[in-house]
Length: 412
Image 1 (cartoon, rainbow, N blue to C red):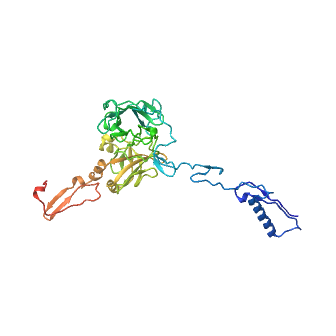
Image 2 (cartoon, one colour):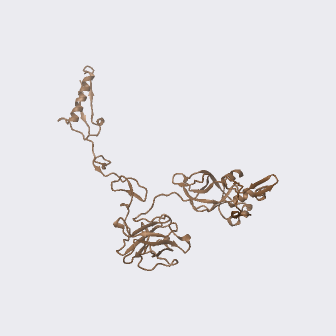
Image 3 (tube, rainbow, N blue to C red):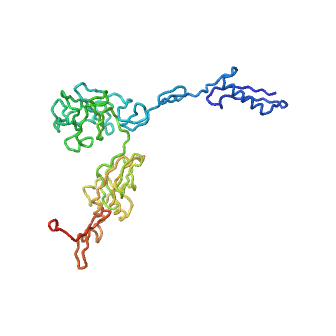
């Protein structure tokens, strides 16, 4: 004997809607097409809500744009914010990145009164923890002045050696200065953040800055925010620009001889690479570190002879590579940079290279080298030859001409 028991299961798909228990006896069989017909009838009953069948929750959730179903698929909710690189934020319709205040950030601790402004300065990405008495801000001063372009401060400008001391430290936005404004103040105020009296102590790239006193967002009127090392003034709270590529800073490395370079790499550096490019297009990125051709260097110890070559550099950290003198000469004609990488292979420091010592070493240490060559124009019975020593040049052009105006000639 055969029994068929439809059992409806709750679920979203037909695969979970039903199952059957089929029981056959040896002597009672029915054609397969009848079983298929019965299955189809059960499906129709389930889809139409047959009176003897418990209906499952198989309805599809439909949401109006821009809402989307939640994770459970039971309700419509606003979509998650689109991803924007700081300082951009999602716009009101969440379909584009725009410049503006991030509503997820905490409020600053100080908002200015009617005739006040406030300037925030954040060193959290450098050396500050932004505690209330953070020593990272000690010595940093705010130089202010009025002029025809920006006449805003109620008091006189500050002396360069004795600038304004910050009024407090915000746990999120760093040190801040409260600035009193005169009646009828202009729409900007002049300032320089600095430490010490040398130009090297100027922050944000060393320029003179003008903070706006007219903001589009009324919540943060007469408020400006700055980040250490960034030559940008933000008119709304910002804590960070996120991960940034390492800058190629200065010319801190020295190429000593054909195979040896000197660089006091930061403590975080565990591997040093020489990067070079004949097209002079070296740049840094978060993904690749530094582009161009890269050669890994090994830590080295200077010999007495090497130390004597440049005694003032003898205490620097030494790095060496294995290449020929001709290879060194070829690289000296390119843009070359040293990159320092941490133990995870991430670029953490980069600097340019001073080449003078290496040029002397590879071009003047042998016989018949540049220091023995006759340079300039050489007149002989057979004609004139010209020789120039330009070891870092990729090409040299000689211009010749017959006509010259004596009044414009320079004779040497």
